Image 1 (spheres, helix red, strand yellow):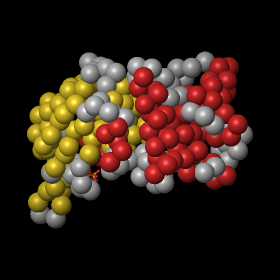
Image 2: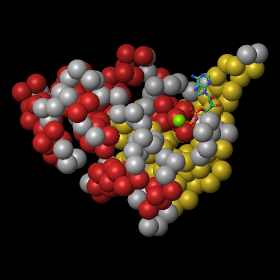
Image 3: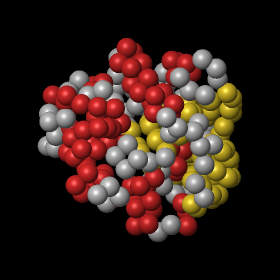
Length: 227
Ligand code: ADP
Ligand code: MG
């Protein structure tokens, strides 16, 4: 499903540059649940942003389900992302003035892949799916951190993307809540969704199938993990 080939991502820094992805090559199959780990600055977010088409490689190719992301225009890329990728962030990034259900409906409104008359019901179903159906009409600020992250996961599922990408989704949660959120991802993976999650949690190894370790923008280990 994902094919990254000889990808370099360099950012200018002073007179030189920072190489955040250094000839990265890896492939991830449909249905895999993969953790990307490594120290701060090792290139984890860069890798996710390349997969999401948020960043473009300086060299090399990123293919997702056969689409060469580097070949798409900005607007085509935004449309592709809206339909094919669900993104989850450390700080949830829910819009504070919209209810939880409205936050989940927003990507449906942008992508227009789900018929307008279905969107509210679908949002409620997704919120049920992640265990917070009873919070649908509330504002995000009235929810706990774990509930907000569940809402963000429901939002990521809005357009039924085959690929979920999560950047330190448990980084702002206590360990008990973090475990419960990782269980939500595990359930989604069990239903067949491909998930790539960046994590600092030691616990991540107990839920994923595979762990990729980055150091200085390179893969230094890539191995299957068994719970
Ligand atoms: P991680 O998520 O593992 O902490 P990042 O992918 O965010 O790592 O960053 C990898 C390297 O690239 C770091 O040295 C970081 O400072 C640099 N970097 C990331 N984004 C930018 C940017 N937009 N401009 C300049 N340097 C960046
Ligand atoms: Mg990061």
